[in-house]
Image 1: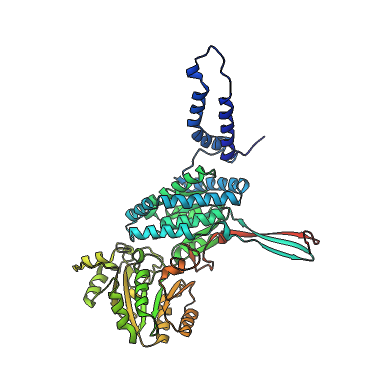
Image 2: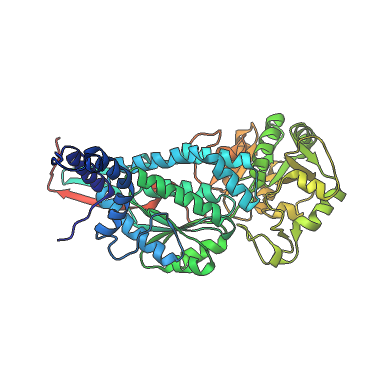
Length: 521
């Protein structure tokens, strides 16, 4: 007879054995020091943790045909999927919603405890953004990523009976993460996917694979410590396009989640499986003549400079009604911005943008047809590094580089992911909306507007049609940072799910009790 044994079962067995041994009477005429109950119990206590882990894999039929592995990082993507599949079957069979929430709580706690190490590690590996902002993003995903509370059943009751619709897991989810929000996406996706009863296998961006491996191992370790199954969260050690294709086409992968550009989304959709795609953006900001200009300046700088503008939601270009442009710029300069001259922006353009697509950043919105592309060497770099490169020295703290230009400037049209903000003057709100919609390129990702005119706000929101529309605040408010609502690192505009959470990683299952059963009225 085969029997499924969980780690919690084995812990209870070991504890009972230890307790029984401690009560055994040692025969007389034996070496009491060597064979004392105390020594036996202490020895068993020392080995029981590792023994339990080993026993889980050797005893349970879920793992009987596979070598022992519990850190979640695999040389082969197919092996990672096999382990995740068996872990998910164990998870859904032997762990209830309370167990899921206990595991998620442990994940939240360990990330907060280790956030400084995590932030430093990903910053040093990728060279993108700012260390202190990595910490803020980790705090955000821990605090505002929904867990099991996001799963809400539906019920239909009538003369014909009762129908219950619940949200069940897909199984094993294959997920792809970007270099810009690498470990944050793993944490955010994992909480939502585990809350929904799934396991997950990640194919991470190669430039962040070391820090991603660290967080995957950390999460696996804490899951095991609180009695959960190993290998609910896995990844391939050396991700490639081949491993991505294997992930997308593996028969045991039931769902795909991709955070990246249109090319990635297209690849996932072509798999024929349920796919959620979080795509590109080039978020515009409009400032009209009714805006609180000092607040607008502060909020634009806050959003555009955060993590050196590598977030897809971040402000990328400003369209300001000409009669208030000077005052807006004045407040921006008083809040950490540096105004680039025409000569300085041309100098920056020479190294920050590339005509050779081979040297371009493979970012969310890379388009081979464009004349200019974003240089991968300058994505996410500090504003002062740009100034140093062109020979400008300043003692003032600089958060953001700004410059005035026309609509056709490549910095307006590209999702540049640098702390550089082009400002375009417009004649009126209608011209601002027309330009902003065109500059957003139909990504329908994120847009911001600063105004006290409700009609203008409504007009722009309807015209732009973005997944996130932020009024009178930084873009960060759109994902719950100093704004209401939950957060996500995967904003699924192309496939329509919007800000993804646990409910998006489920399949609806309907159970029907007919003939009036269970009705009390």
